[in-house]
Image 1 (cartoon, rainbow, N blue to C red):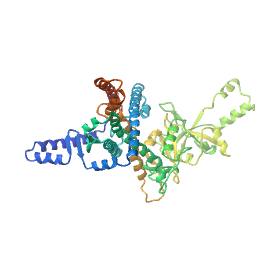
Image 2 (image 1 turned 30 degrees about the vertical axis):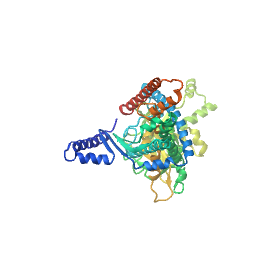
Image 3 (image 1 turned 180 degrees about the vertical axis):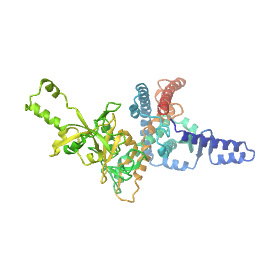
Image 4 (image 1 turned 90 degrees about the vertical axis):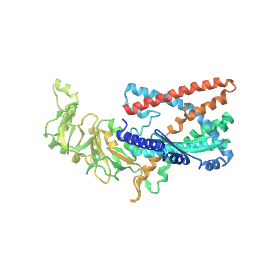
Length: 519
């Protein structure tokens, strides 16, 4: 659901703005001066919408349109080709997203949501509140670059630019350019296509530039930040399993989860996924340390069928299961012929020996011990008699040793995703103590949103009120003028195509909003 405090703050802010605007416009004293002030600054106010327009950037646009005309011609022709491909690709992408959404609704599989080609973005729901500033700045930057493309392309095609502006609709920022419609209608459809496609083309270039920056960020920061030596802890949720005196601390470098090495954040996520979908890891413990534990209590079944042998109030002990060493030796002697058991005993030898359970001090037993899956893993690496003991835990619960030298292991018992959500990490480790831990995170987060392909593709959807509408109309005029000579018929074809594209986009938005908020 949408966070109520965020919704209340947004509604209260817009109500205050609309109330002040209404009072000033209805005041006989301040009405004229207020409206003159708005007009002189290019401001327009309406419910949930504020708009600002200026001509101060027109000279900059004109200067850019005169830079190397031949290069600009090739540049905007490339944008024309990309715009047509993006318009067709956006339809395929929306159809694919709609199919995935419908499949998720019918199968109720939450993992399919992360695999969707496109997702509806709702601030505070599927974007953390802490990242809203990055998101809105990225939207505004993308809008400015988008409109810069339109303005430069228009001036190059001898179309006058009346002005440039920005707006905020509810909470979403954007930008626009005001083109002289008479000039726009006089140029050829191909020239119009260059202008209309320039916006999504520039968004695509911005996306590629942001991706290149993210890819090269380790190289840019190499003199002051190192990578590949582990995942640096930057934030820990208070009260989480990773918090506490023997948990993780900001500045710790995680190098391993059990026997899975961690060289960065990607390894951290993949190791947790691997550990949560594989059987619990065991630990090689000397047989001598087990013997005093055999007489401690009696194992009992939990509600899910797993076994426990420790008191529920114990904070330092954990129940471990193992195969009794003596039983294995007896079985080996019996199989070698040293004993002659009865028939029923021979049949029992075919069955695995029942597991034994021992309640042991967990930190003492597993700190510094080798991970194992079977008893043979312990005998290969140790000359002393050892046995592989496995924590006896509830289903889907895991015991995980987190390595963060020079500190001792952090011991985690719980559901692995809880550990992932409790800790924020980064790949970048400062080489000097005075460097801030959050600088690489700021750069990664800031450039992550402009690199989103949706900003470069969705605006090219053949839909009413988007660039795709004008791109489609210009494309039909350029390609069907000699085939369908009647202009009204071409406009009718364009209308039905736009109607289909609008319905497709509306269905994706409606179902996407329902999936994000209602579920």
